[in-house]
Image 1: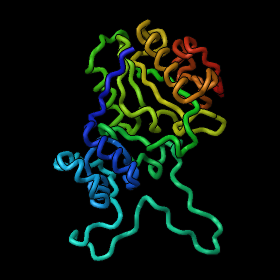
Image 2: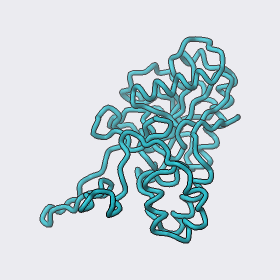
Image 3: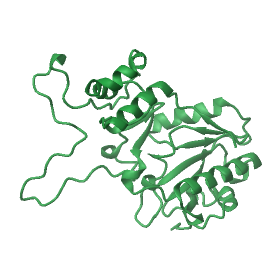
Image 4: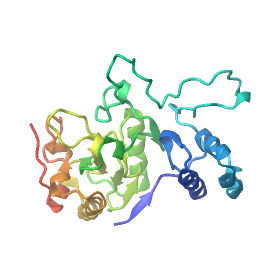
Length: 277
């Protein structure tokens, strides 16, 4: 299995961000993402020793900002802001007599604009670190429903990314016809690949999403099955879940999908999940 990184991250910037994080800096919801921006620069100002060590990296230009970028709190005095505004990443304090704290966004609902992703990579939406939703419990395989018998190629993958952008959905990996595996969003981030429905133990918040470029299960190539099996085993080993966490999109309850979606790769992994309504 060959995993190809599409994520255009800068290793030097990632090293700077890792050093800042280790020093105790707040990098906001973006974390160590390999992209230079206001959060990284704001953190560097508070840790001059780290900034001095990475002076050449800090000289690099800022990366393009996603449409829903959130500025770090406490802007510079010369920014034109007299009084810093509220930090959009910190929930407001509840009223003294409320007894409750305002809940955060639900990562499992992918058809509600209030709960859209707070982060973008390659313009593809995701919900940030999966650890804040309880960790990773499984992996879900999808079919792209593309034309039958496509030839392999990067154009297939780019077409999927374009579709993701237009629909506000995403997955962590795409498996092309020749078995090459492309990383679209890091596997530790929650992507918008399944709708949440009560009764489903597997959802956006706790699964890795994989798109297999195939019209349906009969169109999946042997190379894709082999790659899917290796990728699935890698994720199972990394996140410590068993066959009960391996599913095809068609197995999930209430999903308007063919029951066989993902079936061959799921079977190759010994998948046990079956919660279809």
